[in-house]
Image 1 (cartoon, rainbow, N blue to C red):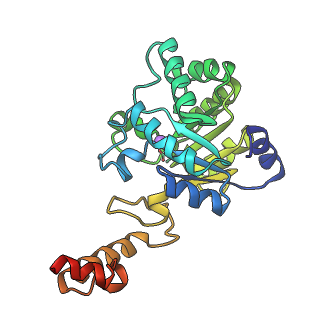
Image 2: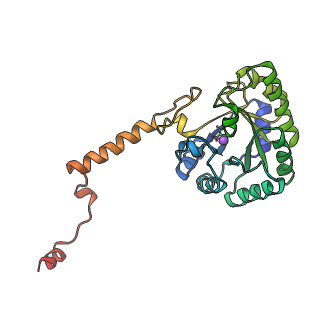
Image 3: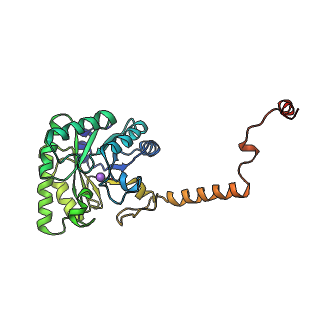
Length: 275
Ligand code: KIV
Ligand code: NA
């Protein structure tokens, strides 16, 4: 399994880091077999798997439940788990206990937290206690109600400077990597050049040290809104839809099941039933 020091080396050598989200066992096994460098059990879980409109209803228990399944499917891949909305802004000791519980119950390799400011102290505390932290700046979906929706961040010089400073603060606090979501590619380049830890972009352009996409977005799996920055690498949803429709038709018209799908009793046993 790759470690945080391997990711630092990859950045230094210009080797791209590939991250993908996963929320269950099959997605984790497929991702590991495909050779991704890191798996994120994102709180996007709430939207693409659990059907909530935002990530806000996702609980620590939800994250733990899904992260355990991912760990079972990807034993040799670095797994990062999101701390959900409201689980790391209160008392620092409570946050620490929650983080320890998430690490111990899931076997995760790192936790991800959105934001800087007050969160910088949390990054420092967790890192110094042995919990690797991935920071997350730019669009922070857990702040959507405050930001007024899901908008590109850091478009003005003032906002961009703040993001660069926040990124440096996260690195100084011990973050092992930084996710940059929905910011202009020029700002991604500036942040990436300012840090020695790797940046992982989503809707942040090519200059990041790595990329992350949501499983259900890149595979077009589900009826949820898919962001404009997500390329379609396959069309799983259409296949699922086609398969389920065919199953319904086959049962209705009697073409399934056939003898091939059935179990057979020996003739002499059968005659005894009828006497
Ligand atoms: O929850 C998630 O999937 C994420 C990625 C968008 C980075 O945080
Ligand atoms: Na997230």
